[in-house]
Image (cartoon, rainbow, N blue to C red; front, side):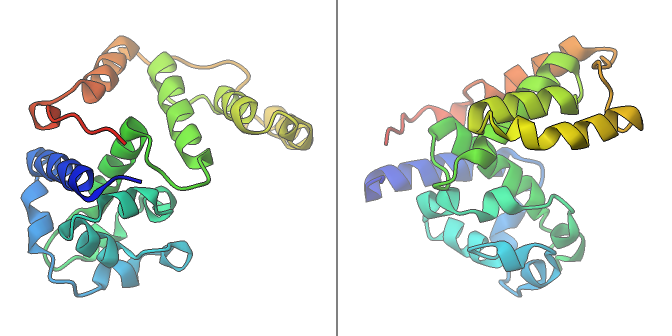
Length: 197
């Protein structure tokens, strides 16, 4: 667990990062109306609603936010942002929080979501797009190799009905996607302060 000083340091870094995002300043304009939480189709499964996450970020409770399941449960439907009276695109902040959770190794007890996000990034970096068969193999090798046996019947059906390709299809310019993914992980000026758990 991070002490109060480390938590405030990390909160400062993340706040500066948020400010650098397009419309990042809008997070401060949240009026806590709860429209985002009421619109969210998966809020019932979250330990903190989107409205609560914003309040927690303002209160420098960054460790609690990163350890919550909420960040990883977000369905990325953008309904919260579409309905927000302040025009806050909350889904973009959720992606940013996932990136920080992975970077600092702070996440929920069940690390499967973090492993899935890492494997997804690796597959997209390699092929320029998602290749489901490889993602399934990578993820299950890291989490539960015996799960392959359960997936065999479904995999055969998907392959036979052309729902899942057997070989990956590369996109033009995959090397540029790799560059973008590498650049997003490069340290930025706002991250100069070293935060250790």
